[in-house]
Length: 87
Image (tube, rainbow, N blue to C red; front, side, top):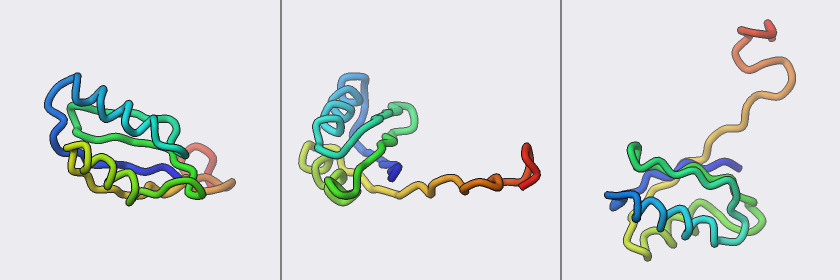
């Protein structure tokens, strides 16, 4: 599941690097992308190993209060918007 995290307290590259490392070190987290400008991180998680709640709790404990939002997976075959494939 892809999860979007809104993170407070990321004020510089060092804090963004800390957030990226903290998230990467959590079992079940992969594909960590942190945006300092947007104060967001987007991660792929294995729900059998972790949860958005755990991620926000770990970030908050480290001094980066966060909220999470699950991102819906793209539509299956047939297209998502009907634009390029007419689905």
